[in-house]
Length: 182
Image (cartoon, rainbow, N blue to C red; front, side, top):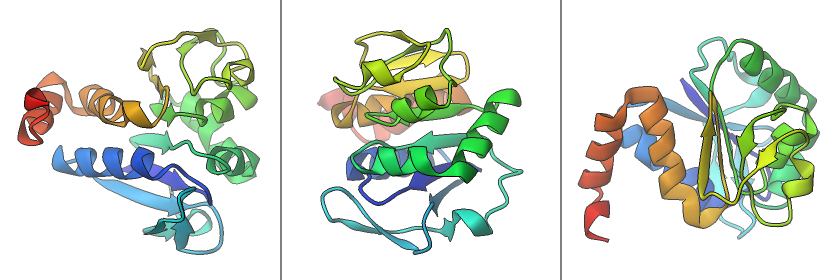
């Protein structure tokens, strides 16, 4: 199971695009609210119904953890102690982790980018403690994927699919969605 974490103030496109594309690739995905409400509002005020609450979820089947950006969403993710512990455990177990926009700062805050290439939304570079910051659209370093912002959502999702299911699966989803014609 791939888990996408929702905190008040998330960036909508950074949740919906990966969610949609991963489902098209046949990957099981669950959205998890880190607060106490299933309905979580994006930074644009768009309400999204989470599949479950963090406190109710057993993450033992985690295939990947995804952190969307947006503000104050990324900041809210960074304050959640349970998520911090889960991210640390995932990194220790080599479970892939992906973060986009301001969310790589969450990984940086917890020292999880040490020595890795990473990218983020401009202005958050100083928060990527120990990372080798790049200006790439999407950066993959081992089992960690980072992306620079909303415009990178499709490439971010494609990189996740490629990591989890291979090049063919990623190409198939993009072809079905007509990205070759864009």
